[in-house]
Image (cartoon, rainbow, N blue to C red):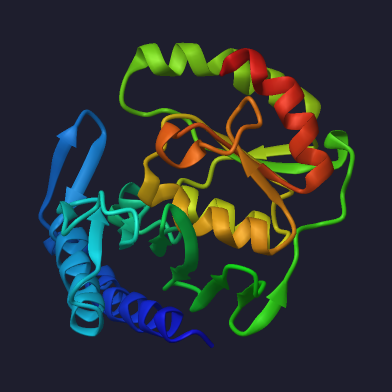
Length: 263
């Protein structure tokens, strides 16, 4: 296993220890609204600090892009390593005791994601990938499904939650896709949804307005598991654009065909 991936796994477990401990006493968690319906808790912040501590202890020169603390280090040096971190993807789920949330850690080198960890602490599921070396769930190789017709698929998505205007714009897209597939799910943690595409629990996933820390690790999992990730137009600049489609090669193409008008 790549030493940098090993460090990321260690960091994810350290963050998850804080999350697990807090999950036993949800009433005591102090949560504040960043913007409408978008919450951050002291658990997010503590987990993020623990993750960053592990990564910077091992690699002090590496830059960090984290959801709660933002960027630190030289993000714009082309040769630089950047750790992209979401300490708790699915905070709303977590605060309600709904067991669908994860830690997401990715390493970007020269603009390319090279290492990925998505850890689900409630199920003790560790999804990992190194570029060019495949994707794994708890050390077992994973692959996307072989489904090739969108009518047979189970798809994941994320509803916008910050404003009613966003929801109004989303509904026609939801209606279209719900009518095309076997089932459409909205579990509430994009990084975990992408991991589920990689391991074949979902055949595809789409969502708009995501942040790099929602996407980075999950996208590498999908591509290393034989799937494709792109924008709604099928392009590869999804990481900072934030509009993402992921799926098996044939399903990806069909989803792009349907979702391109919503790009």
